[in-house]
Amino acid sequence: MVEVRSPDPRTSEPNINAVAKPDKKKWVHGEVRRQQIFDEAIDIIGQRGYRGFTLQELAQRCGLSNAGLLHHFPSKDQLLIGLLNERDRRDYAALESAGLNFRETTEFPIPFDDLYKALREVVARDAKRPEIVRLYTVLRAESLDEDHPARDFFLARAARALDELTRMLESNVPDPRSTARQLIALHGGLEEQWLREGRSFDLVEAWERAARLLLGRPAS
Image 1: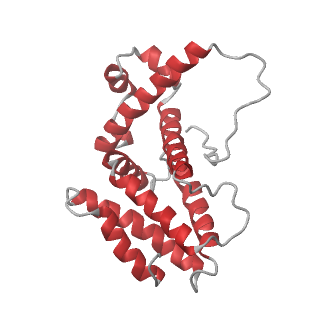
Image 2: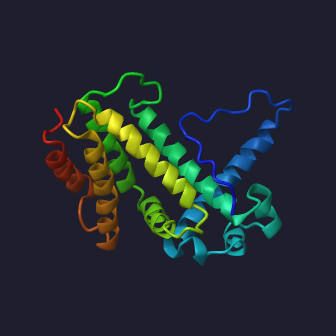
């Protein structure tokens, strides 16, 4: 099983001590190819799960040889962890572009309206990307198996999310840790229902109604 470090995607920094600088054109081409691989893997894994796809199938869908795919990701496990970290990185980047940058926040709790806006933004973003929601829903369930390569990733991610949300909720609710657990469960549970019911209801509206009841007050 590949070692999973699960770095915080918000604070990962490039290696500034690298001696050689890669050719920019090659780097751009390689990054575009990596994104193509990620996009195809999201579709396959979201439909059939991690154990239901092969690197050979992924390579064919990307127009690559097996060796060409392995050049970017030496193993199936490393591809999976890279995909999960990339998804989190994109989500944090989207929050920051919306003016919700908590990476540099040093004082907790954060104002209630800012917290509500950030949580809603995550749900609204997910509602536009059902393929990503399906991917995470499938992998979360699969990673309950002790030998699943994403198990450590999801354990670390869940612990970090619970701790961060708890700190954000302090002074906003009577029991911040319990409320944080419920908000996380609300998010995942609603998204699973949304997928099962063919996205037949408004995910954001359903979340807003439940969150207002859970948090005890509406955002202004």
